[in-house]
Amino acid sequence: MNLDTLYDLAEKENVKIYDYFIDEDINGIYLNYDKLNAIALNHKNIDNTNLEKCVLSEELGHYYMDATYNYSSSDKILIDKQEYRAKKWSYYVLIPFENLKLAILKRN
Image (cartoon, rainbow, N blue to C red; front, side, top):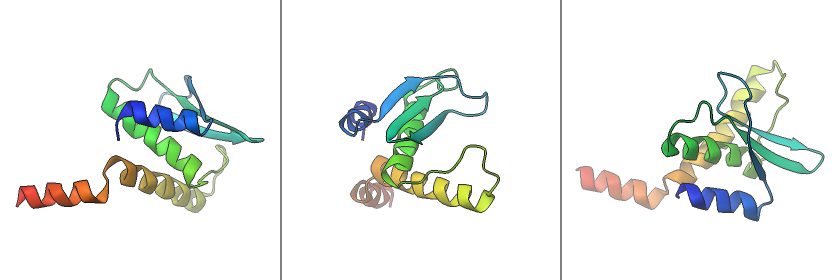
C-alpha cells in the first residue's frame, strides 16, 4: 500500500491528520476522544516517505484495531499489547501475505 492510499483510507474513515510536534522521541500518535479520531504526525522527525508510511500505517492500526490507551498510562503490559495490535495491522497492510510469499520464493 502506498502513502497516498493510506491518506485516502484515513479520509474515508474520517480520521483527521495533523502535522503536530508532540515530543522529540515521538513520530506519531493516534487520538480518540469523544468520537473524534485524529492522527498527529511529527514531521520534524519524519524525514522520508518510507518512515511516514510506517508511522501513518501504525497509527491507523490503532484506529482499526481499537488499540488505544491513555498517553500518561504506566501500565506497560497494556501499552505493549495495544502497540503490538496496531503494528500487526500495519504489517499486514504494508506487506500483504501474497507479496511476502512471492518475495521469499524469488529469494530462493
